[in-house]
Length: 197
Image 1 (cartoon, rainbow, N blue to C red):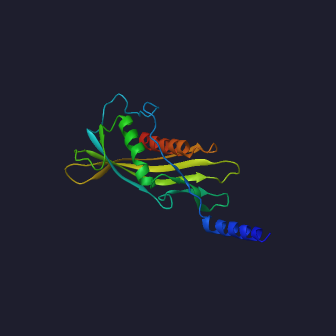
Image 2 (tube, one colour):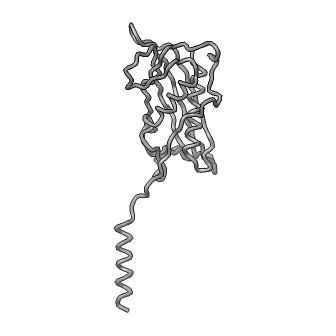
Image 3 (cartoon, rainbow, N blue to C red):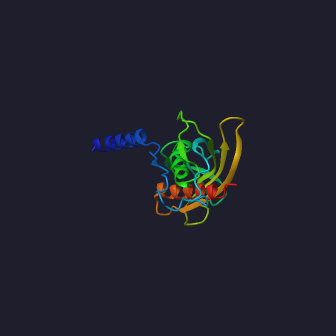
């Protein structure tokens, strides 16, 4: 009989020492599939640039952190303790940007920032929204918004040649956040590229 209180005490102490913050689930943002309607008005007119470098991809705070930013119904934002991006969003978004530029048709050969190849243009992306919108009861939507600048590089000063903005959202209620954020980001980027002027 004296053993029972000891076992209960040990079980409670073990729970106190082992309980901790839950390990969040990691999610990615994937490039749009090739041929998924990414060609722009430049289709058939050839490439405007011989080679284009993927330049800076900047993500505004608070969206620049790995944990998801959740927009709540009371208007506040919070970081999700259970879901996060697999890496910092700026690094994670580089592959979708590069893939969509390559599929676009106006950017010629698309090279990475670390490439030694010459490029006559650079594309810089500013992400102004990358959040999980939970403001409406029972709805979850992945949201993304971007601004894209195409800079002429080479001899002379760098100058912004084209700019465009885009926004996208996708239903995330099924819980597949990789698919939802991929769709929202790719939609926002495609809209920005279509609107370049």
